[in-house]
Image 1 (cartoon, rainbow, N blue to C red):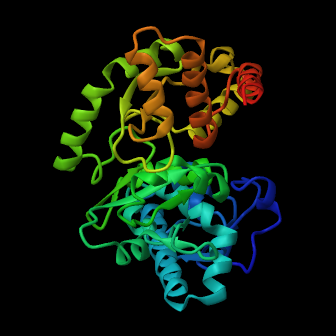
Image 2: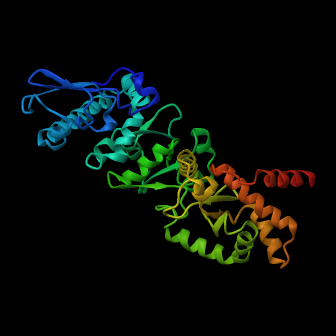
Image 3: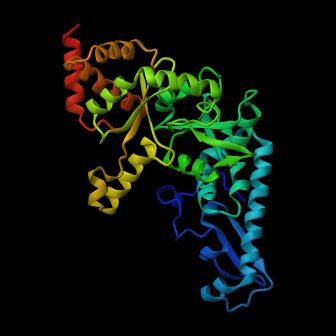
Length: 362
């Protein structure tokens, strides 16, 4: 059964080994409640009793690890739990909401770790989305609400809903009116990465430089190629002014509507949230290389060719001798895009100086 709230022992350590959740009996004789092999750790919160007639009474950990009976029992426990979660989901209401608030993170761990049951567990994981600020949604419910012609499930990551809503990446689907799911914790993003697709719909991160279902449109490609040629000198100037350590390249994006620029990652790049998580993990493990920023990756700067800031910068570059004002504009473009995208601004002093100089010229 699922307890009404998270056990106290699991509050500080969600996989506390001293907390026994399954009590093993053999022929109604209690054996132990500390057998971690009895069920996967993502079900650590589930309480239950297992009574087997097929295991020997002098059962030990080494015997259990080799027992085919144990593997059968473990699979049955998982199936029983999935059926139980399905009943809770069908019932909905406060019980389902409480279950998600208390134990939703365990289901996401299950998606990451349980290869055999990943898709089945994926039916129960919930995320915040643009559809409703007060309710969580499953990926299945998202798919039911998909617009006509939409082929992918979209998500953005950030440290909380407010940062996700601030992300310029949302503009990539704004014109289409597509719903976007929010990954507000590193575990959420890992869950999406492991699922990859759901009900034949690919799960796509909007923070990538090439968004499937949006940027692969033929009309968009032609529009981008034309703008890319028109802004060629400006793009080169941006890379030179900002530096190769911060951005790997600069390119035009025809999907942006309001923002002047956005930072994106290549197909296998890490989101800013994941970069922060990996850096914090490196610090905890004492990895001096990554403490110095080794986990950081050069981003792709995507610009909005129709934004007044970019048209003015292009005019300065096209004159042939962009001065300090143009260089400051390039640096501010990068820093503002980084700030809105959830990236860390490495040189806060420089950013403050640029903003102060801009205010002084007004």
